Every structure is written in C-alpha cells, then in structure tokens.
Image (tube, rainbow, N blue to C red; front, side):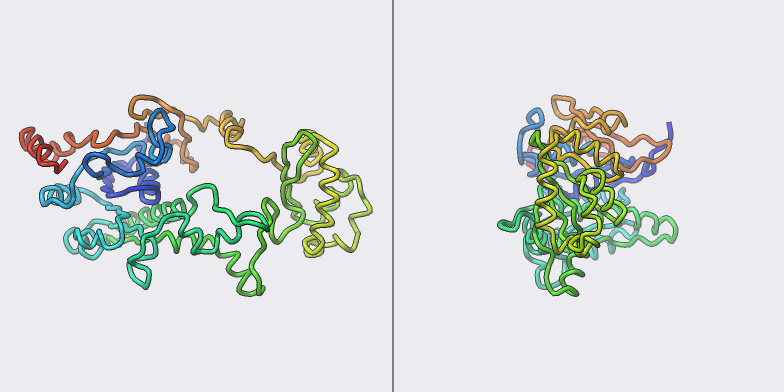
Length: 394
C-alpha cells in the first residue's frame, strides 16, 4: 500500500466547533496523526450540537474521523505540562480558542515559536488576533452577516443565511492549505512559519466578485433567489410535475439553441429585448414569463432532455435526500463506511483524489478514547494516569 502523504506528521489541536476541526480532519485524511485535545467530561461542544447520527452529532461525525481524542484540563499546571510534552513531539499545532484564551495559556503563536522553534502554529480566529475586533466572539452566521453575504442571499423580499457553515468551511480550507504550505516551506528551507486565518477574512475573499461589482457599479447585486444576479436566463423554473429545473445560458449560441429547440420561439433570437446578455438581464421579467410558461407545459425529465439535446447545462433542484442518492456518488464509489461510537455510518471520500493513494477514513473517537494510550507514550505510569483522572486533569 502507498504511504499516505502526511504519514509521520503529528498535529496537536485544541479545537472546537467547525473551522479548526475541518482543517485538521483533512490533514488526518492525508495520513497525519491528529491528537485532538478536549475538555474532560463533555469534550468539544460540537459533540452536543445534535444527536441525529446514531446518537452522535452530525457536525462532529463529519469533522472528526481519523483523530485521537485526549482529555486535558488546560487550566491546570499538570494539564498544561502534558500538552507541552505533546507539542515537543508535534510538527503542527492548531487552535481556535476564544479571543485571548490562547495568549493566557501561552499558546499564542509568538510564545509557541519561542519554546518550539520547529513547530508550525496555526491560529483560527474570528476577526484576526489584532485590530479593532480582535476581542469579539465570532460564529458562522455572524460572519455571514458582517461580510454582506446574507444581504445577497434570499429573495427580493427577505434575506437568508447560506444553508451550510460557509464561513467556518472557508476558514478551515485556508487553514488547511496554509498548514500544507508551511510544512512544505519547513521541509525546503528549515523555517517553521506560523499560520493565521480568520473567519471574517476567509469569507471576505469569497465575497470578492460582489465587492468589485458594488464598488465599481454603484449598487450591489440584487437578491433573486435561484436566479443569477448578472446573467439571464440563469435560474430555476417550475415544471409540470412540480420539480424545478435550473439552467444557464452562457453565450449567444446557447441563447439561439434555447429559443429554437426548447422554447420553440426562433423569433426571440434577434428580439432587441434579448439580443445580448445585458439586454436579457435588463428584460429579465419579460423573459421569465416566456420561459415559465413553456416549462409548465412539460415534466422535469422532458425539459432536461430538451436542454441536454440543445447543449445547455441544466440540473434538477434536488433536496438533500436526492443528493445522498445521487448516481454520481454511487457509481464513482464516493461513499465509504466509517465507525463512530456504537455504530458504522457512510461517509464521503475527500474530494481531492491522489493517484494511487487511498485516504484514511478511520473511526470518529469517543471523548478521551485515546487518553491513556497517549499518556503512556509520554512515559506516564498507570498509577500516575489514575491520579490525574482522580484530580480531574484528564
């Protein structure tokens, strides 16, 4: 079997919720040993977000496979001493503690790099560790609001949150890529560089296009539900069987094909209201009436076949159950079983396939499942470990 790319890399993470666990899970997928430090007792509070996956949290199951869980009270001297020993053996340290907490524990990047010169510290914060909002707590939906994303999402009448934790996911992705870059830099230059990512700045990057559009156009893109703010037609339309079909016209060839082969209205090709993309956006409402009337005369399967035959990209608007049962996932073998405490459940393979390499998809740990084994690796005796447990340190 081919060795996983990050085999031999040890990551210690004082993490909770979504952003940092998402980054470290991807490192674990590639073979890194991820030691997840949790609070004695309840552990990561994301374990209690829900109980829908055979009694486990859907968030926690998604984000924490292939990790080892050790419980430590980091407010106790003994707990901090054990963490320090773990850091002495690690290549990477990740934390997304509340504002100021890492510095109080001596786990900020500056303190860590003084004590462990070869360690790569990664900080995931809300608004950055400096600046006017460094001390503010931040959660995903707060960041969606602050970056203006919520103002773009929804219908003309009402805003809406994005249905997944998009700010956390963005920050986790940048933390992951930042850590990979730092590992490469250390391997090629010998210099270990700290990584810092904030939820706000991660999602700010994803807001680049609407920011340019607003700054230079004078107004922000409108909220249009499933319609595209700057391209028309590009959106979802109801069909005779009630299912919506979304399609996109990207150029004049596709516009002509839509008119002639789907709408059966060839005279619309050169209609001055719809001649070019900007005209179609300006006359969106009139165009929507024409498309809606045609789609309501056919079922969704027939509409999609017509669009396919015309060379126009399209898709049915699926619900989550339809996504889970999607033939692409099934026929490409994307589902694999993963053990969780007390059960086995399907999980999706990581999306980036490396030729000849199978990702690691090991169990999701119970709280503190690996504490005794990890402490024994550090040389602690069974008696000492029991004493730490009795004192509430682990």
